[in-house]
Length: 247
Image (cartoon, rainbow, N blue to C red; front, side, top):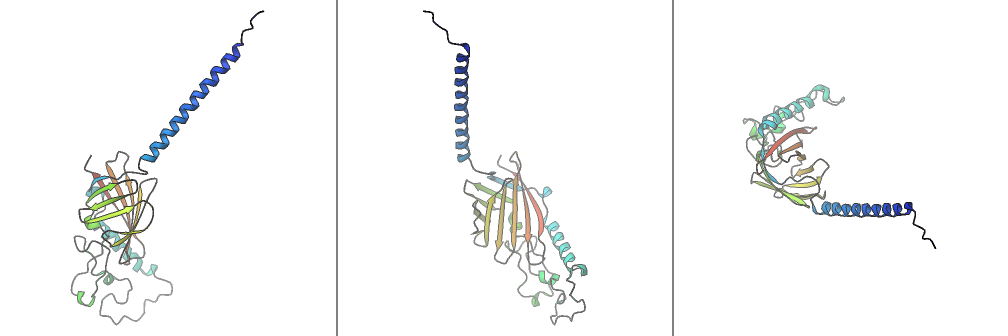
């Protein structure tokens, strides 16, 4: 009896099946490794570090004040007033020079000066009558006086930001509003594809929305801030840039 040899095609088919099985096993193992790595590393960008303000790349307090004044002028211009408003309305009985103009500059008195004053909010003067002889101070965005140095610690759930060793922002990345900044503000924080979004509402109604973006090399941080204050209807937008010191 003659032995019939197996066809060559059958041997090749078995080899292909073995090769395909090996590739599938390798692909499955690689996916498992990627899933484990994704679960163990923090999501989004890591802002941990000590960051120093770059004055040359940032909007200065004087620049922010000019933008505020320009917005006030735009909103007080006749073309920006409602159609039913009358420019011949009777003047207010107040002795204040800005009595008949609604959001006049007199309403800005007593705000925080660019070099000092309080750190939170942009309060107006409580006693306008006693401030007639004193120059009016413009309001400033919250935290502007203390944002020259940021010390940031971050983990998977949230982060802590020390503003020049003065104010501390404790926040979580779950999008839930919580009290922070030594109890002076309600803060909500979310990670975004580009970085992080922080929204702060202060006791006096002032609002500050920040968009944080870190450079790809981790050496630079840009914070674009939108400041909403009662002094103007439209928010004031400015930018602060930082360089990392502890690399």
